Length: 428
Image 1 (tube, rainbow, N blue to C red):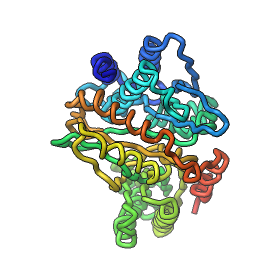
Image 2: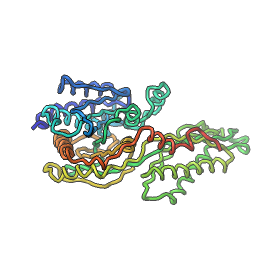
Image 3: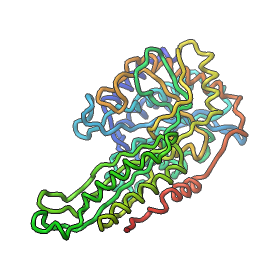
Image 4: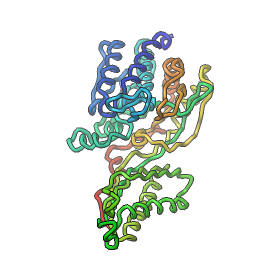
């Protein structure tokens, strides 16, 4: 009954955020909107701020042996200026579904607080609203890094660094499922790729293209050779690792009458596992070095960590499956898929067990120009009610021996091991 009563208000908040998207670490309006709603639900709510726009709030308390569970919602939008409801000034658009995550979190909070059902849980429940999940607007974030305002491009790694998850034992996320479904559908155990961001700066020697091409060293040809090498090397890449490489020319000094001596090629590199991410990065670096050497040029290589692969915790997913089989409102459940999309939930899953439950109810292409919800009743009433059932299923049933915990320091060491060969630009 509570979810039906609050449905219209929750839907209004979702729509308002959808039509007012903000990019990561800039979600000031969104933050105010969410906090205003939470305060209307609970006048005495305690809000703890972190980073630039992140915040969290808790229900219940944690004793010495009690569990602490985080429910995470992401505040930011995607940069998609051609989206039908993109912000005209910033190009931000909510074609990622994060706006619905926020509303779902609010629906859960309101249910547990208003009904006092949180008092029946044997764990403390903290709602964490995280900024900057989408890996974009990097020039702005680089500025924030240089100013010391953040340490990570992604919101969850930044929250990890700030100790937001220090006393939390496991985390639950939700995310819109890409594609359209004829039946109301949820998804569990959908693993995600990890990725690096690679930048190759090819340097040659500029000369007059007509008068003296003979003494030139063509940086564009080096980049072309590099792209050819990538294409030919795909035969050597394991299909099981779902490798994705997308090189583009980011910068050049080309003109038709001058041999180009400066070309920057950027690419993301996605794989299913950390070890293969390292191995494939070495292949790309060798291809770049060889291409530059073949045409007597140089290449500078810069590697930037994106996000770690996300392997969902299968033990925690058993509670999702059990709740689904007891549920009469959701038609289908998808299980054990892998997609080459990535998210900073992968980084958090290094530190603790995490799951991300998918939900249908949308039309258009996720991250596309026409993405919007078409089944708000499912998204803002039925699905949150299901999530409450999952949490209640977990209460009193989680085996702590099946959980794990790693430190932020260990996380830093892992990231360093991935990019250590390219922490500083190198020349060949």
